[in-house]
Length: 339
Ligand SMILES: [Zn+2]
Image (cartoon, rainbow, N blue to C red; front, side):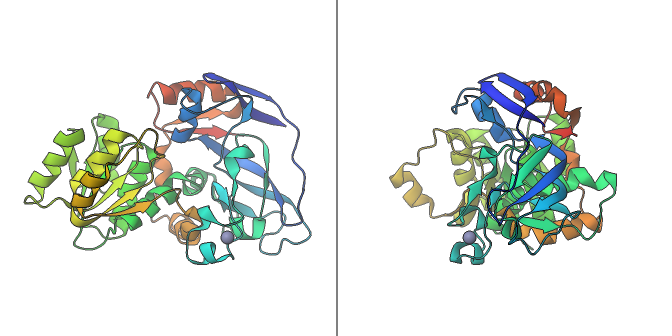
């Protein structure tokens, strides 16, 4: 089969890979219908994380081709969506809704779903079948549910978005934009998007942002305080993962407020004394996308949300290298790869 391999930072190739087969009786093999490139794939691409002949990709939708002897909840031929972390969905951590930290979790990035086929461990716990075979135009949105939508949704929930609340969103990438959509669906009264990019501002507004702030860092946080009577936002989503973005989020929240942080932290250090006096709740980490998948799939199926709009470039899998470059150069927010 064909699949993406990152030989070294900046060196992405589509190559012949061995087609996966069932290893554990709880595995399923899926034939991918579409896959995509994640903002977090740029960390190794830019040399900030290690990359040495690594299979790439952790987002996926597709059709079940084969199941192991123990698989009961999905069948051959089902169209399925899964999270970027495989989970048993039965341990105490999963039952509490934190499937991405399942005691048996398997990171799908190690398997590499930017490929024609993928082995899905713990298939019963990981995969959710759609109500039927989706129309072609629903596939981008279902794929978004696999990571960015689910992550943005968790961030909005962690930021306690809801009726009467003011929610600020740091990060105008696919996750930040999805968090805006989530905050809107969860009933937030006011949604403030930090963004300097006209196209992203437009999509932010379409997804439900009521205000746009172009300032960043301490200045950005000061703007939120000004806009909220000096209090700060009730909840803030952090969807970048840098020192500046993390403090921008923390300082935009009011005392007693909530920060839902889902940007993968790189070089983020929190000074204990400064954090102490903020008096905020911090809740985040790798999003338990699996918790939200049934609800998100239904909203997409019923055409109530259209998160697939975050994809602004579509390329065939064979042109994955161009997709990485486009995202690295910020010519694209998120790239969908067709198969
Ligand atoms: Zn578990």
